[in-house]
Image 1: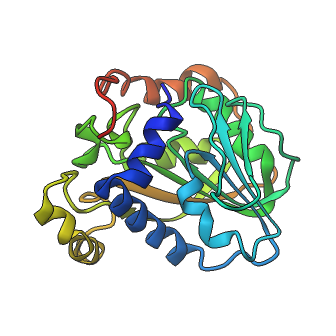
Image 2: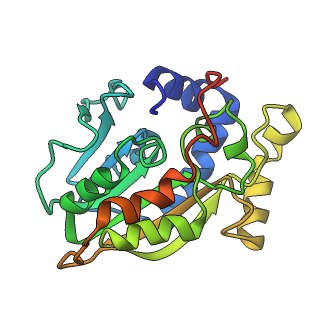
Length: 248
């Protein structure tokens, strides 16, 4: 179940905790992908906060937002690049995206297999995608006062296995959100310190979100008997978190 775009906007742009989370995740994204000159960059779900660094140099930036979530104009003060779309049918040409970021998309999807197929379709043969999901063993997945407390959290093994079967081959992974999901002044003031410390200690277990980079396998691998064999690992996580409260 997708959160409402207004709740996501409020969290990331109007709360201190959300702005800190945005900065921590974006720092990891730009470390992995420092530039996108002349490339087509897209985000799906609510990835807009992570796309801003590429607006000035990319050939095209598109923020795809699913109908179940809703859409908002973005970026503020500039020509709009956000698009409302069907979760599994994007208005994007096949093999056209060089960099794709999916955040608040996969864990909230009612059709994860079809969503991953659409990610595969739009990626260019040399393109890369970055999937950002709640860490199943992290603190952020256990608190429904943030967007990462909704949907299906993943372990690193579960996520990489799911992506690999779909022809999206994991190349590297990192984590982010090492600070507790608390709005108390102490944790907010020391957030950057916890992020730096966490990256030195663990990139798998301690972070609130997992970030897996993949490349497109060409040709796509055969997937006989996909429907049940691949859906089952996701379904066992259903019900761990149900929407209960809006982000604060």
